[in-house]
Image (cartoon, rainbow, N blue to C red; front, side):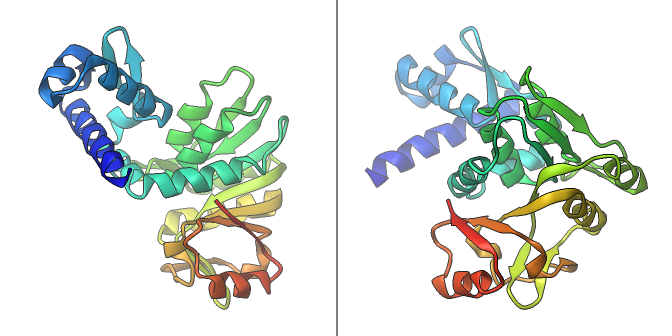
Length: 258
């Protein structure tokens, strides 16, 4: 089973490489190049479309707008993708139809945005270019992209304009992807531009949900965001150390394993 999965992952990674190089792919050509059947290639393309890597067209696929404009983001999105998807799915389960949510940027946020498309009538305020594009495709959603200065490498907006706009909104939840969660020293990030945005999102939301894989637990990012007690829920993966989870629960944080 594991060998078969590795074979599938290798083939799909190759499809993404070809798509990055050429901008589009055809089923017939991929079938010939990868020495597999057209049926298998179509299945691969359908799966990659569901994960947001491409858009299916007649006879093949093209890059999505997100991936065309940000190749670096695409590469990071593929890192630990299955773990991020499970975290994203668990986080999306906390959101109900009709909710208003604030979300920041990051690859796990992107996967959460994909999962949120199953909900209805959401109001979303975000500084993430990739999440805004993904969520903006849902007719029943009202999506607001916060305008400001742009960090093109990581696809988010920041600055005083973003903060001033955030003051207009109240939300049920803030969903934040961060770089470090430590029971003793708090929540931290690597992006100086996002610190104030994350703090403002927390201030404007009734509940704060942190999404972070287990590698970020008991880690400290470069910049302090808030005390651990200020967050309400943490969504992480099944590999999280039970002793770390225990410490976080002692801070009255509800921990959800995706």
